[in-house]
Structure formats: C-alpha cells, structure tokens
Length: 425
Image (cartoon, rainbow, N blue to C red):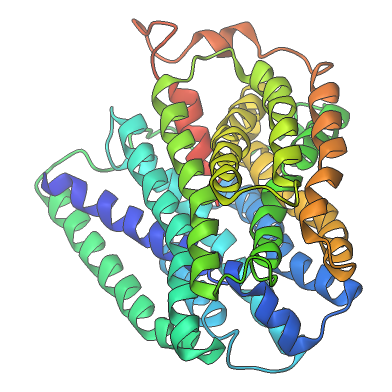
C-alpha cells in the first residue's frame, strides 16, 4: 500500500489544481455586474480565462517532451492557487485579466509533468496509475464550482481569498509527503522509478507531426468545434440560472454546474475501463452529432428543471466524458509527438473552442437570451461530425494494441495514458 502514497498525493494535488481552475465558473454574473462588461469585454474575459491554460499546455507539452522539469509539479499548483483565489480582491479589469492569465499558465504547467509521472509511479500498472490521477482531477472539476458558490454566497467575491492559504498548505503537505514516500520506497529498492531507462528522444516539431501539418490543423479544427459547447456550458448556465425566472443563488449555480462536470467524470471513468481500441474515429463523428438534440433541449426557454438538469448530465457524458477519444486518436496518428499531440487536441483545441464560444455567449447574454446560445452551438457540432468523416482511420497496428493477451473489450492502455498526459481539465 505504501507505494501508492506518492500517486495518491499527486492525484490529490491534481484535485486542488482543477478546483482552482473552476472557481470562477459560477461567478460570471457577479463579475459582469462588478465590471459592467459589454459584449467585447465579456468575450475577452472568457478568452483570458480559457486560452492561457490551453496555450501553456501546448508549450509545456512540447518542452516536456524535450526537457522534463519536475519543478512544475509544485510550482504550477502554487501559481494557480495564488492567482485564481485572488480574483475577488481586485476591482480593475486589467488586473482581473492578469490574474486569469497567470493562474491559467500555472494550471497548464502542472498537468503534463504530473501526468507523465503518474504513469511511471506504478510500473507495470500504468493504466491504474493514470486512472487514479485522472479521477483526482475529475473531483477537482466537480468541486470547484460548488466550493466557489458556497464561499461567495456567504462572504462575497473577496471570500475566495480565504481559500488560498488552506489550498497552499495542502499543496505543500502533499508535495512533502509524496516526495518522502517516494524516497522511502526507492531506498527499499521498490520499483517506483521510471520504467523506461532508454535515452529520451528529442524530435523536432516537424518530426513530431510526421510532416503532416495540414492534417494536424484539420484535426485541431474538428476538436475545437466539438469543444465549443464544453467551454460555454458553465458560462451559459450561470447567466441562465441567475435570471429572475430561475432566481438561483451563486451556491445553487455552482451545484448545477457541478452536475455537468460530475457527469463528465463518470463518462471518463467508463471510457477508461470500457473503451475499445479502434473506435476513436467513430467517437469523433458520433458524439458531436449525438449532442445536437441535447443542445436543442437545453435551448428550450420553458424547459422544466428536471429535464434541463438531466440533459445537462447527458451532455457532460457525451461531450466531455468521451473527449479521451480525441486524445487517443491524435497520439496514435502522431506517435513521435505524443505530448504535443495531446496538447493539440486537449490544450489548443480547448482554447480555440473557448475563443469561438466567447462572442456567441456574450452576444446572447447582451440581448437578454443566454439560453438561446445553445442553438448557436449546433452548427459547430454538425461541422465537427461532418469533417471528422474525412479523417483517416486509426493506424491498424495502433488500434490493435497494447499488450499481448488483451481482448477487444479490454481497457485500451493507449487511451488511459494519453488522456491523462494532457491533463484533462
């Protein structure tokens, strides 16, 4: 059991990082009121919240493939905690954007280094190690909005700062405990050390993409369009639920947002244990198309609460819970640039999806009909599914395998490793 301690500490750190990343989710109506955002200002705030995390994941994924830097295992979480819990203490737009950008960089910096380490802490059991790490992040995604809503409901926006010190103390404690446990196991001769002693290959960016840059950009477009509703969901729901006809408090908004994110966690766990290798392209085509009727239900102005929340949970499973298929597909297409491929599909794609949704969500909010934004996401999903039809199939050798003796219904080790390596967030 002791050899699991470093992994558990890493997974709990992942929980804290993703909690910080989602603290802002239920606060958009209050922030709009404080800063009097117009359409352009609100769009820019959305972009400042999402794009830095995505771009930093691509940058750190590339750097990590060439020069591992364990310092980000603790420095990234510290940066995220310091900046993202301070957003309620300032009253200037420029400072708000600066905090969001810096905090997002800290979130992105942590994920790649931590995900790779998680796969090495249990040699011979990579899938289990990655699953534990992923589950820690999923807890954080669901916890962030609920915790933020609870605190702000009682102490106002400045109350977020009260979360900073305990989160920092937990980060330090988990780092110290994890390192000591790893050192103890190493001194006992346990096999918690990386299981691949071969020299690290340092390919160029052109080599990572195997010379197929146009294909990589097309795949980025498909993934970005598919993720537009994901990036907008918390924002749209916050504006919908705070309207007089709903009258939800900040705490209630956070709890509703957590439904979507908790459902996404369930979907990812199912994908980890039941996904069949070779189905990646089918998921790229089918999931966006399946989500279209869900978007139409969510856009129904008179939708009863039970149906709205049920549809929200279904959307979380279909759109977010199945996103590992994108990462698996990308890494099998670009095996020499696994880190960059996952950063492309779950780093840059999330950022571009956030940029696309920002003016859509902002405009519908400005005209007093935020729920109608779900209709505007339908063309994005339709285009994602249609374009994915023309993507090449997964290479046969990659789809077939992992390890000898695995049946077609077994866990795909490829998908489990790839999802976590780009830090699902």
